[in-house]
View 1 (cartoon, rainbow, N blue to C red):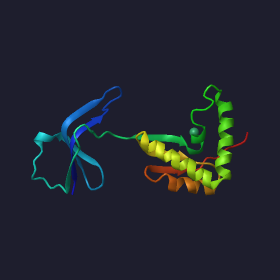
View 2 (view 1 turned 135 degrees about the vertical axis):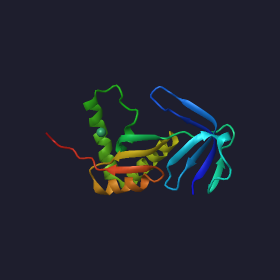
View 3 (view 1 turned 90 degrees about the vertical axis):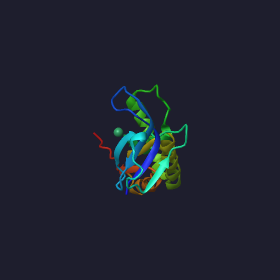
View 4 (view 1 turned 180 degrees about the vertical axis):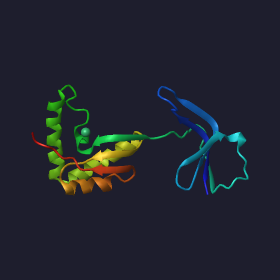
Length: 159
Ligand SMILES: [Zn+2]
């Protein structure tokens, strides 16, 4: 049976548009999909609903972000050397990736912090790129708990 959420919902129906829906009802089916959103005053209380959740006043629900391209080991290099040309920046990040691959506990710490940061900033889903080392990639997978993630292997080709 679906769940109903009552309250304020914010979404961006098109690029450059923001819509705030006060006093609305949002219906989520058993598969977790939103199947309906409409003004709450038009909702019949007799509908088959498993649970109604009323959002506290002053709060709202909004869609989360999806990061479709995230190099997880580069998280430790985030915000550094932004003035460097790309290839020079990548050389530095390569060293960071070597450090992640050389120490599994360090990798666990970095990926745990990365996941925490993603959640704090509203990202719920990500396509994560790990390093070439299989063991480190496996560390990344449990660290991605709390978000939906696909973990891929990063491979370099020397030319
Ligand atoms: Zn990339």
